[in-house]
Length: 173
Image (tube, rainbow, N blue to C red; front, side, top):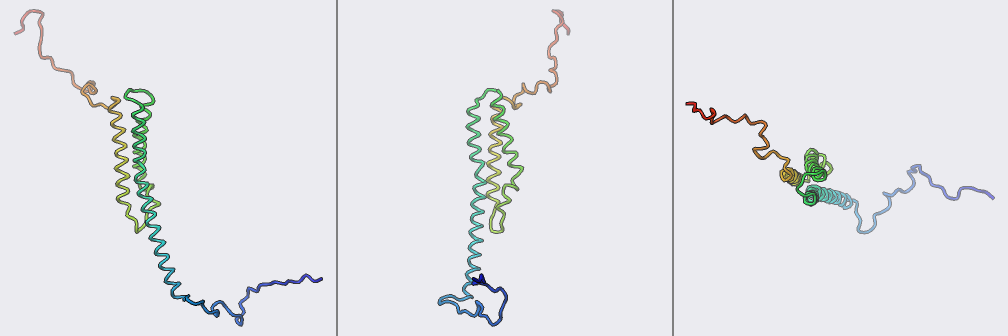
């Protein structure tokens, strides 16, 4: 019994062999329409990608709102007395927006595209983070940790001038 190769594929180009270009196109198919379809399909893909990037940029821009609501609830639960938990929550409420504002460019970097306008999502992102920062400052004020009263600055005030003098019952005119 011989074990010869029954199936073999020749990868060399034999010019006498028929190529795929010699085979006629099926009815209803033309190569020119395929090229046009490819360009319209690629244009549609680019438009779909730009729409997706725009949608995701808006989702990222609105994400601080959820954080704002959660942080507000946590501050409410912490109460208005100064203790370790309320101070920790307050400084977390201050730190998160500050760090988010420092990284605005990195946050929106994946969504950069010539067809996507990122100005409005960035402005919303910045506004919501500034709102979170304002919430943290408000909590600092309600805890009494901001110097907002005159009594907070007593050490930096000059001593009061004496207006009246006493001579021990003897007039000093």
